[in-house]
Amino acid sequence: MNETDITHAGFCAIIGAPNAGKSTLTNLLVGAKVAIVTHKVQTTRFPVRGVAQTDHTQIVLVDTPGIFAAKRRLDRAMVKAAWSGAEDADAIVHLVDASAWVADRAGKETAAQKHSIEDDRRVVEQLKASGRKAILALNKIDLFPHDQVLPIIAELNQTGAYEEVHMISAENGDGVEKLEEAIAARMPEGPALYPPDQVADLPMRLLAAEVTREKLMLRLHQELPYQLMVETESWEERKDGSVRVQQVIVVGRENHKSMVLGKGGQTIKDIGRMAREELSEMLGRKVHLFLFVKVDERWQERRESYQGLGLEFDV
Image 1: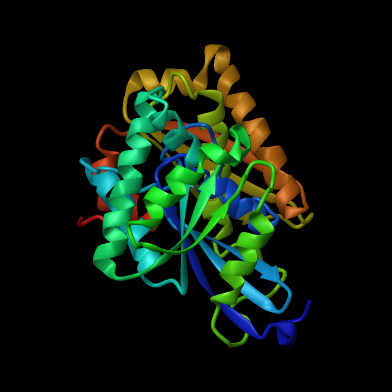
Image 2: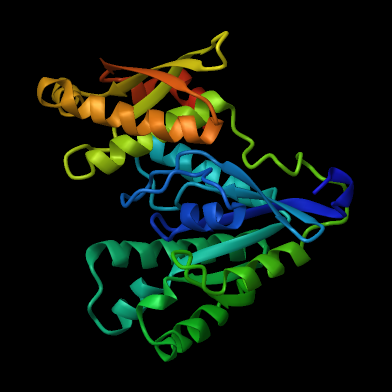
């Protein structure tokens, strides 16, 4: 597709509670991996823009951090980034984990699901306060009979925060095509905002850091808290067409460093290998990846840490 084929283009923000499936949905719509997907909540720290094309419409997707009750500075910065992404968008999709609401109605919800519902209600209140109406997308509907979700649709519709409702499964793609059509219908007339072959508005250094952070989360999901950050320190283009990437993994405590390194350095070797393989595939060329671990107990209190993540410090 050429840029001249695009007749409509705009921004769509996907908002919702942590772990609602926002990154999975973004990746599915874009058809490429642009947002990290792990089974831990709060893994997306800044708006990741993915570019999706449907017919003659270009949709720039803003994959926002999960919206939750924020106490720490880092959490507040993430929530602010989520709302600023939504306020500027041409369309808003509120993605809801329907399985949490179904479990709640049956009195079998987990603590995490209870938090998810509280976060959803918080989103509803914010939408009503802003005067913006969203598209409601109930996710994970492949996990239970559809008739169990009808009372939930009725309850959420009564809030007046939504103009349309879609039932989807971001995991297997059910209902996503119709949701994409609904988003596309809200994009204003205008030329392409990005080249049609470009999937993410992310500097490669930042995306490379996200890939490594995903591998850390997947490998250390039980042991490792959220207090870690990955920075791409250097990105060197080589004459043979390959690229040399050096990254530092910043952790808050000395014992976190030993977790990342693993026995005999095996854990960091495995993480480096997985990240290198994925980056090589994404870039279509050989990647030489070098990882180092640094302890900085106060990294979450440093302004420059937030600038690197595209977040505001003063919130």
